[in-house]
Length: 154
Image 1 (cartoon, one colour):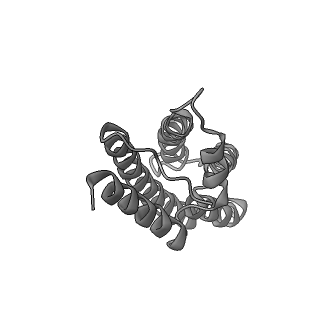
Image 2: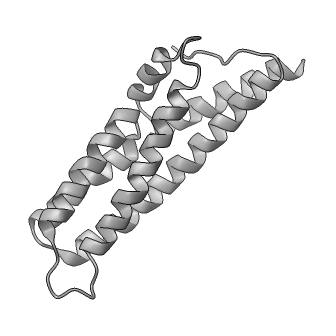
């Protein structure tokens, strides 16, 4: 088996595992379908923006939930989680989105302990999906460098 076929098989298997594990949903596939020769880095650009926004949102959430403060800004938590839920949904980061949904129950109840637990969970899931997507993009680069085309999943 030549290197391109081997890399393509590895790519398909890896991407399939991300769907199987619930890290990604069909929205990611929809984004991939928008990528073409006129915009070959579309998915990478969209996901990179998600990474940049997510880092800011996680930072802002940590500040809003800081136990150093006597008053937790639950409105700011609400705004950040709402934005995080929307951006994770838009790229198909299903498990991140799902935690954002449960996060709401905690901040609606003004449950600081629950919010801090959700913040840690959303951080863990975000960094997991970020690591996995970066691995996926490295595989794409290797396929292209070897003269192959990125397999389209359908």
